[in-house]
Length: 390
Image 1 (tube, rainbow, N blue to C red):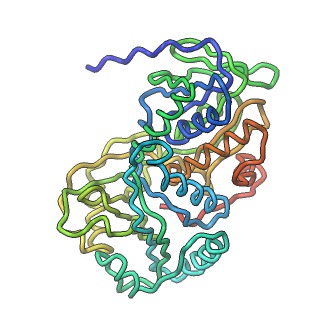
Image 2 (cartoon, rainbow, N blue to C red):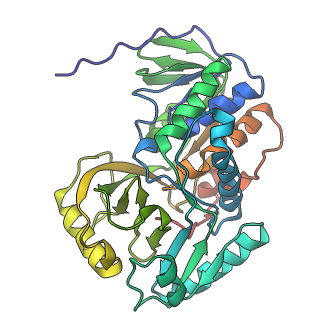
């Protein structure tokens, strides 16, 4: 039986406490410290990236249907392209493009409109024919496809490396990162944050930033803020080395089934939902998923039929009712900021969202306008659905 690690000693106070050590948390802590905010503390109940980030597929893209998501994705891509220079950390960025496969006529108009919006915002993307799809991703069966959407500058990277780079840079700027430190409560007095309770003792603070992913709803409830985030299990499988040039393959996604694949080292990474959505925090691998994955491969990517499984895992999406993120400052209690509910695109937006949370804390105009992503939109029934989900 593995012993529970002893949490480190916590400071008596902090100017800002960031809760959650995934890509959102470490990016936020880094950007706050870089802007001159002192006494920033990041709390992670397990180890950095152990929640959803390091179980993610690692896609990075600016291909979305929502303007805020396009801009957040594009800005984050700029950071990821420069990551080795900025953070002295290789994240194995592969920019082989992102290819969305469409086999339903009703999806084409949505993606055409999205591509038009992306292009108006300076993102290179285009609609492509099934013939072009066959050239871009020769593993794919194209007979029933009607079109595709292609983002040549998108790709994928290694999430744990990005977390490590941000964390190391944050520490160098004075951020205290405390792993194995669980939040057990958040103190509120007269409508404002006054502290955080942990399994290692209290920390007095006037500002809490919630970046706890699928676990954010519980933190919001501690201060009376409704963060409608529901965990949804997703599986991933990585193959043994393949005989073809995997790294030349785009991140390919079948929109109607959410089956996707991209290179992973000398092999391939494949992902898909469960046959029936599995809501909740159960991250056990379901053996029935492998059978479903084989069906999806046979249907959409018969070129992958002979690959050999090497390893796999399950992780959690943090899903909101409109599959769009929650980013903002709570009006119910002073000093509570949040960024969660990214519904599968958190890793790719982490760098830019960290900048946005920095700006919200400092009271300056955010680098991307995220006012429409406030959690208040659900009470106002102002849903903001995102079409480019997986």
